[in-house]
Length: 216
Image 1: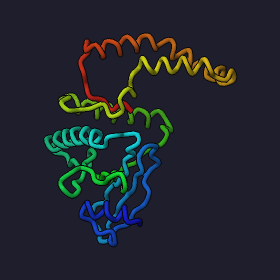
Image 2: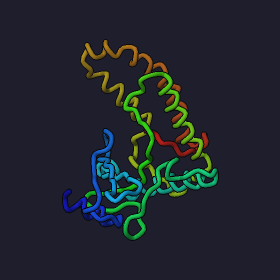
Image 3: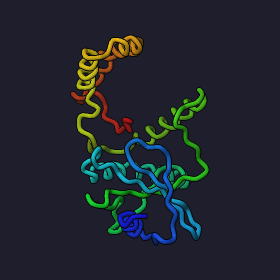
Image 4: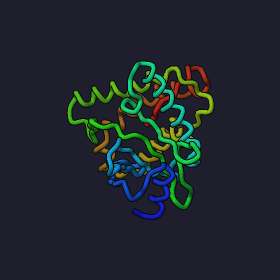
């Protein structure tokens, strides 16, 4: 355990000498670790935030605070344990939901939800269906959350008009064999892109109701 990790654990009130840390999952953006206390107690999830992708970190974490606290409120209202039915951020020193700097990296911590399973790939239709239900449930819980202060964490990332331009530009320089292999996907995209662009243009013009979404 390096000195930076020790400093992060201490910021969350943990003794580095009495915890075990192991890698958790196969995330593509952040580094994720399981933190277990040797003397017992609920395990925690520690994440090193990729602040190259999400910069500034404050913007990302403000969004996450609003979403997780709103879901926790709804879970409590429904008589559910918020730590077992959603991400529940833990406070670091100073009452913030994250800690760190350019030197140590930026970190956040939450309770680990035990007795759960996750899948890298939906191995069958039932798993895909349950995943869809989970996403739908998440989105429905955000219906009543206001947009005040919510920021676009990666400006332009979901600019559909820009993405279509990039798609067509990519096709201009694509290798013929790959074009042939992806033929059906290319046809599918070109068929539905105009419809999606129409909806996107309407949303930019504020002609559609604005809702908070995960967008991953």
